[in-house]
Length: 236
Image (tube, rainbow, N blue to C red; front, side):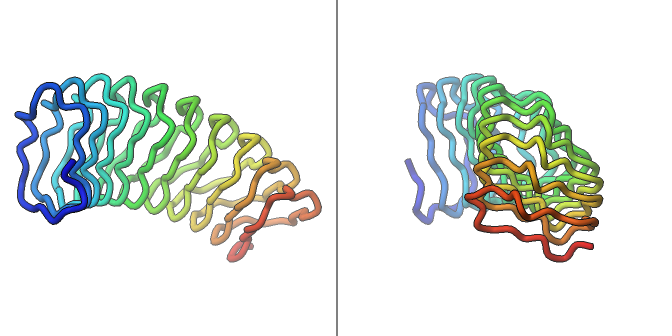
């Protein structure tokens, strides 16, 4: 564990000890590119967050049993292939980098419950109908994703869904969200059409659909009882 220091410079991760299980480097000033293709096979926890690493990263040859990976808050760039992640991966945080290109969310590992892609420059359309069934936290905000989104087949355990500050468009169906979902942000996109607020999840506490192109009337008489944030501003 080397985290929370002021270490700097480039790192060679290709000759680490073969039994290495936990490897924390976050919150330093490490820089340069990183090769993640020759990590020790027993590795379970890899944290490289909050450094100055840069360049592309290959996520297709990670240790096959790796469950936890944080690469967030660096300067990584290029595209990422999410179709060959480790089969046991549960947490993937690659937010706050400079990643670009499209992402395929249809072949994510089945145990994945945290996926954070926010604050990058990802683009293209997304299929949200085949996400891993345990998914609990799903952040896509602050990218350039576009196209329509189907919110009717999201994983039932989902608690946090952020699609804000993208270029999504078209209508959205809010009547078939996960029944226990408490937090939903769709703000600052190009969504349009009418919205039905009478069949929202019973535990919804935060709903932000502001800064879109929604139209029509809204019925506020059947909102969820826990709701404490409702933002409808800057629509039509």
